[in-house]
Length: 356
Image 1: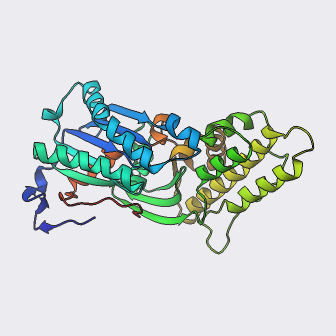
Image 2 (image 1 turned 120 degrees about the horizontal axis):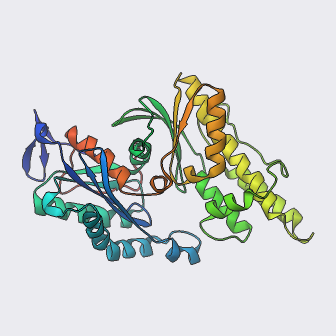
């Protein structure tokens, strides 16, 4: 992110803005990093007035994954309607919006461009501040929108279809990356195993549902602990092991799908829990936050909470609607960035990869 500064002023577009006046009452946030078109209105940095999400899951389902061209096309079709609905639900309009926040990356470039272009147009038309938000940082902030929130610092896990990253979160604007996946993200592994079993897309919800009726000890699937890089993750070996067991059992009668789902899920959860708690112990932090789409998984929530208590820690999870991609989390991160004077110019670009 490029910031041009002159003493106490930050350049937005071509007009200098006094950063001491950047305390937006009503902020509109836009999120289009993947296949959800989302908009939210945040008041006074604390009150979420609206949080609208238009999902494309039904569109990409038949392709067994996100088709970037289709995603960006549907963002174009939906973004105005979604933003208008967010304003309507917040009982306000653009004349009352003081600032705009938008996801700038990481994500699908075509999808991100739609959101950034729309946000730029709104900010320029109204002459109000615009900030670009890191999607991963926004996920880490999602837990701070809930009733029970961790104080800083906390160990934060972003676990989704595209990312499995572990951080120490120091404040609203600072997070240190400890480790990340070397191959598949956890959510991606769920999707791929679901496809192996002939289940529907996305795989996370259906595997979780079937796992409730299965035996998590039926199959001894590997847990990649990576002692040389203990905060990193790897799920490729687990995925291969599941495929091997499916092939061995094929033709020997009905597949024990529920047991496979339960055993696979338990292996993923075990690794996530162990890595997070190891980080908490290593950094002497007693607060843990698990965010991202996979954070809706009931087994992960139960085991993380249980094991955290044994260690004298407390685990926090966002509300389910704040785990998957949304604009509320972008709004909160954006609010604190704007208050800090972190703004972007009209020539700002999007990024498929954007580390915190």
